[in-house]
Every structure is written in C-alpha cells, then in structure tokens.
Amino acid sequence: MARRRQARVKDKWTMKKWFTLIAPEYFGMAEVGYTPADDENKVLNRTVEVTLAELTNDYSNQNPYKKLVFKVYRVAGENAYTKFHRFELTRDYLNSLTRRRTSKIEDIVDVRTADGYIIRVKTVAFTVKRCQSSQKRVIRKVMNEIVKDKASKLNFVQFLQEAILGKIPSEIYREAKKVYPLRRVEIRKIELLKEPKVTAESLAKSGEKVEAEAQ
Image (cartoon, rainbow, N blue to C red; front, top):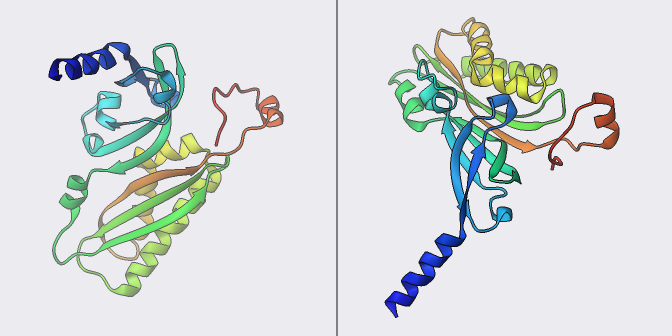
C-alpha cells in the first residue's frame, strides 16, 4: 500500500515541468526563480518574492531590505512572465529604524498614476525626537500631498522607480524636515490595486504592443 502511494507521488512529480519566472521588462526581465506545474494554466497568478539586491545584484544601501513581489500573467513555452504585484520593506529593517523617545509618522493613500494605474502607497517618517501631534499632522499632510502630486505626473513605471530608488522619500524628507527634524523617510509599501483597461484605440495611438489584457 505504501509503495503504491509512493509511486503515485513520484508519478505526479515526473509529470511536472519547471517554468522559469521572468521579471517585468522594466526590471530587466531577469530570471527570478522557478516553479513546477503539470499544466501551464496552473502557473498563472502564482507569485514570486525577490529582494531588490537579488534582482539588481547590488547589495549596497537598503537594497537587501526592499522586497518585490511579482505575479505571473502569461506563460510562453517554459517561461512564465510576471508583472508587479507589491513592494515592501522588510519588518527587520523597519524595526531597526524605530527608536525610543522618537515619533513614527505613517500615511496611507490610494493614488492614480498618470497612465491610469491605481496603487496604494504607505509612507513612514521617523523623527529625531518625539514631536507634537500638531507637527505629526503637518508632516503627514506633506507626505500625502507629495505622493499624490508625483503619481499624477508620473506613469506607473516612473513612479515605481522614483519610490523604490528613494527619490520620492528624499523629496518628502526635504520638505517635512522644515516642520520637525527627521532621521529618515521611507516608502514602506506599494500595492497594485487596479490596472487601466487597454483598448484597441489607445494601443493604436500609442503604437505599443501589450502582451496581456489589463484587469
């Protein structure tokens, strides 16, 4: 009986093949992992997590603490192509920024990028010393307004690049430190909520080829 079960398990594995997970084009289409399946349709919507350091082979700065999650949207041959699903900082890194007798200020806002993507952006700022509630409100407003402004002017890929590589946090830091001295500002999480619908008319105008239909 045990031998039959072992044989069945072995047969299931021999029927599976390995698919190579490919990062989005704007992340260099790097190979980010492998996943087994006996049917390519079962690979769709699977996710893979990779750090920015692993993706870029650059372990400097905060790259090892920045995690990207990609989701499979198309399979061609043995390649499974992914798109952006989520970005976040590791919990260990965020905990390392927390200090006693200081303030942690957080903001969450849903924004629409210039090309129609709806994303949820979570920002966090850490002060040098504990600040007053009124100062927290002003800093939170600065964070909120800069994220909204950037999203309205940048397309989805541009916004991701500026948020993940630190340009948007740096701009928030420069403005918010005028309210109260800060130690650090970070975009701690970005979630893709909705993609724009792609129409034949918009494709004809842009001249771009889209491999998958946006949800």
